[in-house]
Image 1: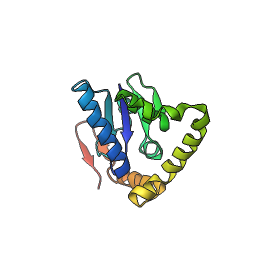
Image 2: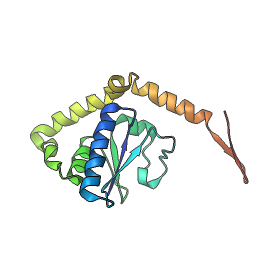
Image 3: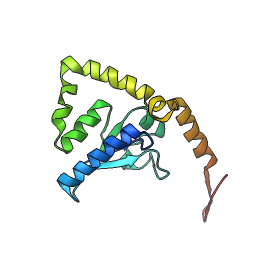
Image 4: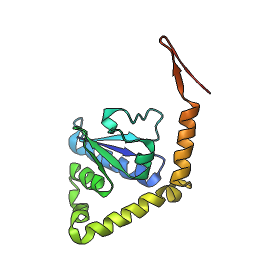
Length: 151
């Protein structure tokens, strides 16, 4: 029902996604409600409709999720929806209360801005530049009958 795009190289992110996946499997078995897509995977494709056109840069800048109908949500709302799917929505419900919403949004924005510095030892800009450089090096040239990778 929802595809969460996350950074598996962020230990905090991975721990939370592993917990959500485990609880989802326990509650829903083979009819899981949460799909996880690792934006650090070599197979990550922002053009896949399931990924909602979320680029690596956008996905690294904040947590995003895509509903089956293509709607995209970002930031704290992703956690609220994910936790609702695993019957723990009450833990994040306060994030939508007007008295807390602004503070939560500001706190999340600060965390998202500095998350990679804290969890990965590199700035967001450095990681995005490294990713773009890697993709440019791996740029594929295709002809009508074959594809070769430039190195």
